[in-house]
Amino acid sequence: MFCAASAGHNARGVRTFLILLIVAAFLLRLGAVVALRDMRQGPKLSLGSDGVEYDKLAARMVEGQGYNLRAGQPTSFRAPGFPLFLAGLRLIFKQDYRPQYVAFCLLGALACGLTYLLARELLTEGAARVAAVLLVFYFPHVYFSTAFFSEVLFVPLVALALWQFLVYLRTGSLASVAAAALALGWAALTRPVAMLIPPVLIGVLVWSRRKSIRSAVAPVALLVCGFALVVLPWTARNYRVHGKMVWIATNGGSTFYGANNDWVIATVSHYGEWTSTITQPGAAEDLAKDEVDRDRSQWRRGEMWLGSHIRWVPLMLAAKYVRLWLPDISSPNRAFVLLNVVFTTPFLVLILLGQFRMTRGAEFWTPGWLALHGTGLATVAMALLTWGSSRFRDANAPLLMVYAAVAVSWLVPSACRLLGRDSRPPDA
Image 1 (cartoon, rainbow, N blue to C red):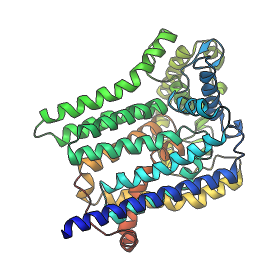
Image 2: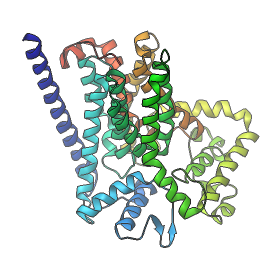
Image 3: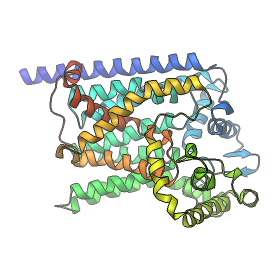
Image 4: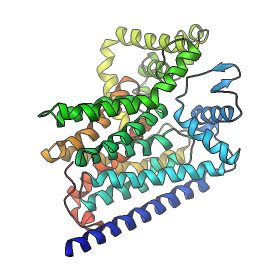
């Protein structure tokens, strides 16, 4: 009787915290949008071309013109996940941008809730609440909700996928594997870097079932099939419109070549950075090609440059890695840079301290933890291949806040006890 009453009390406490967390996160993000944006206006080029093109793709789809930026020229340059989401909002709310900003804030708040649920699979209740609260106030994640960035959708999708994967490790529920696979598929359509995550999770599954490999067959097959079910229809569409194989998008070459060229070693301030390939050798020749051949040509140009600058590679890798863990200071808006440095640096310090703490404890190398570590390493690998973008880092904000919570529970354990009873986490 006591156990049942205690469990009911705990469940009510979790629900109450989750509701309060999501409401607080939503209101904070909505306040940021009101302060920084005219909610009646769409994305501006001052924040980069990504948002402008996402919005244009969504508008053209709703108008029945297909997935293109120019009439009669189907494109795969931008991954379709976020434009499709925007198109759904346009179907409902027409050209009113206010509901889109509200949806961004809701997704940001949902990511905070999912971070709590994810962290509860690995940490004590108090530490899980710390992770979620940290994400509520994490400046880059708050800022995502104010712009037409694909991270708005990508962050909650990855958090959902990892949470459901950890639920499977704890319960053996194949429904959770299916949910993780579908979420990862949409995440890959939103940011193709997510294609690196399924191999990580498959490796964790096989390793965790190494004493009975047969038991890993069903979850591995379900993960692969669920992911493919989401991604392959878009791959088939790409082949139909281009006549060539394109898994998701054709902008990988420009990202790779833009990060591996003479410009990035011209001055110290450029180390680990990216520049537009329009300014690079071969730009005119590449622009004359169709976008698939242009993408492949830019991959080759980047590879050739690396091959002829081998001695620079160690320094470039170090610069990319360092830049990945620094606040974004590339904006010409000095006030934004100051805010970013002041309000992001403490979190980054906690994240790095948490990572250091995890190297000193075997409890942080269970299958559940390996799923998080592998996902983070996939992002690091992409940054080392291309450039040290803070957006690459912050697209993994939920797992970063789990790392930060480890640091808090290590340095200030009373903070965790204050937020929740210091009970043991589920065995993930």
